[in-house]
Length: 165
Image (cartoon, rainbow, N blue to C red; front, side):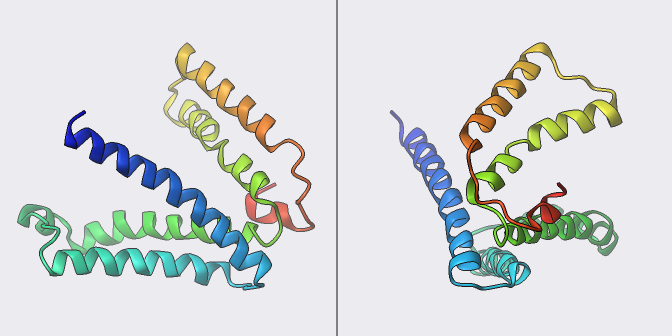
């Protein structure tokens, strides 16, 4: 196995470890410790990511090509980057707010249906139906998610508000 393959495998393991660890940490902070500010908790992660990215670029660890820097005008920033950033921040904040009302399994269950929602919206907006293989994959994904989340009785009053249910 080459070093490149080992590096890629290590990054995949790290990604699959950090994601669930952050989910459980957020749940602990919001529910067990009683920190009632999910938007602040979400923004701390975004601020950390931004500071880290800018710091890496400032010290030369990450290099951004001049043509890429020049392509990001104020108009580009305001019409493309900001709307996506705002909606991503809202997604994180509402996801964290849900931890105040529901169990981790239910929240992950709802998040796992995202590919189904994207496929449905793609069919409605772009008139692009999933192939047979894609439809089968979505069916297996949703069925597996239903089985995994079945029996999570940690839902509470008001919990559906943040998830849209």
